[in-house]
Length: 263
Length: 279
Image (cartoon, rainbow over all chains, first blue to last red; front, side, top):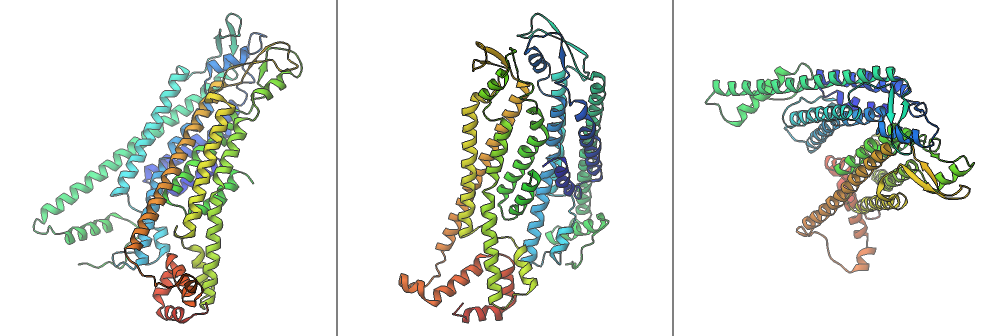
C-alpha cells in the first residue's frame, strides 16, 4: 500500500469531479506526491546521520536533533497529502451509493429508472447536484481546512519556511551551548518553498472550485425560480419534474437519457 | 506477498461487507497501512543505528537496545494490522462456500450454463442466516485483536510515549549508563496517531456489531409478524422430504439478486422446484 495505490483509489473519483477538481488532482499527484517521492525523500534521507554537533558527548546529537526537528518535513508532507486527498473518498462513497440505488431500481423493474442495463449504470457519470453537491462541497471544504492546518503547523514548528545552516543547542547532556550543523540546508529550503508554493496553488484551486460550485448552484436556483414565475399556474409536481428533466438534458453534453416520455 | 497483496485479497471481501465495514476497511488501508509504509517505517528506520549510549564498552549499546525495545513498534503494528484484517477472510470463505452451493443448485435445476454461473459470482450476498453469524464472529475477532494489541503496547511501552533518555545497567555496561533514543518526539507523534486510528477502528467495529444485531432483530420481528411455517413433530419434520424442499426454498429466498430474479422470470422453473421432492 503506497502512493500508487492511493492514485488508483483516487483515479476513480476523477470521473465525477469538475474540471477544476481534475486539475487539482493532477497538480497533487505530479507536483506534490511525485516530487516528494523522487526528489524530496532523497534530500532528507541523511537528515539525522549528517546532522553534526560540535561535541563528542554521546547523546547530544540525538537530543539536539530531536529538539529542533520534532517531526521531519517529509513525514509532515506525507501526512498532509494523505489527509488532503481522503475527502475525495466521501464523493466516491456517495457515487457508489447512488449507483447501488439505481441498480436496485433497475432490478425491481421500476418504471422510473431511465437506465436499461447495469453496465450503463456503471459507466454513467453523475451530475453534481442535489445531495451529491453537498457531499462534494463538504469534501472541498475539508481539503481547504486540512491544507491550511498543515501549512500553519509547518510555519509554527519551523519558525518560517527557511532551513537554517547552524543551530545552537544547550539541551542536556550537551555540555554548555553546542553548534550543530544541518545537512543540505539550501536544497531543503528550495524544496520547502516549492512544496509551500504548490500547496498554495492547490488552496487557490480549491477556493476556485468552491466558487464555481456555488455560482452553478445559485444560477440553477434562479433559473428554476424564473421558470416557476413564468408559469405561475403550472405549479404541480409533474410539470416541475418535467422542467427539471428538460434542464438536465440541455445541461449535459453527453449521455443522453433514453426512453423517457413526456407526461 | 506484501501490503499490496493483502489489499488485493481484502478488496474482494469489500463487496460483501456492510457500509460501515467498507469505511473500516478504507480507514485501515489509508490511515494505518499507508501511513505505516510511507511515513512510520522511515521514522523507525535508524532506531538501532542511532541509539547511542554514553559508553565505549562494546556490546553495551546492543544489550541496552534489546532490553528497552523487546519488539519494535513497527513490527508490532505490522502484526496487529495483519491479525486485524484476516478475520474478514472467514467471511470470504463462507461467501465462496455459499456461491458453490448456489452453483450446485443451479446445475441441479437444469440451469448450469456459463451465463447463470457467472451471475452467481457477480451478485452480492445478503448478510443473513449463517453468513450473519460468520460476519459477526469476524467483527468480534477484529475487536479482540485490536484490544489485545493495544494492551500489549501499553504493557511494553507504558504511557505510549517515547522517552528521550533511558538509563541502562545491563551487563556488560559498567554501572548505570545513559542511552539516548533517536527521534523520540516524532516517534511519540506517530504512536499517538496510530493509537487514535486504532480507537477509531474499534468504534467502527462496535458500531457495525450494533448495526448487525439491530438488523437481525428487526428482521426477526418482521418474520414473527408473518408466520408461515407448517408445524409438525420435530424429527418427522426434519426427516421429511417436505422439510428438505422447504430448506431449498429458504435457500432460494434468502439469496438476494440474480437467483430470485431468475425464478421470477421463469415461473416454470418455480413449479419444477415445487414438484421436486428428491432434491
